[in-house]
Image (cartoon, rainbow, N blue to C red; front, side):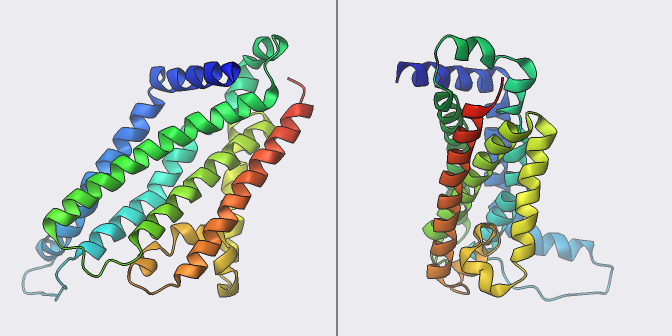
Length: 254
């Protein structure tokens, strides 16, 4: 336990010193402010860009539009930034050879993985919560929350999808020992899931559903049971990825 805490502190300190945590948090804080503001000004902005004499009728923005911006930014740029920020979480250790001294002094290899997973998960969760709270406060200020259904389930789905991405990045780093391999591995798995999403019958079992069907869930246009099934598959995928990471890392030559 002491080894876990010590390595966890080292990971958190490293993220702070390299500004990774600050960058991730600032990006999601900006998203938090942008989501409701963009939804609020978008009709006026579009109207100002139209040529003279041309008019279009746009519906008044609502809380759904603000949360639509939240899930659009979070599932696209947000997840991409998360993967990029942590793509070197294991790969850099192999490249720099920093694990040799730690492991030869008796630290268990699984401790390294669980410490890194915990540190990355805390940073992701804190950044995500900041974005969620800011979006919620400003959305509630501009509009009422009437018509917004299943918000917690939708928020949870995107969060667990981010956790799955962290697990993929760790596994990719262990398998290929370099940053590019980690990125390509994670991107490849997301691509496979995206291709599978073309077939509607895979939706309840496809984790990518957690980043694409959020707004539909908010408007009762998607079944909660299917979304929860995809969340369960994502959680199982997270556990399996970490299990494989431990098995491979135990056999890996440093």
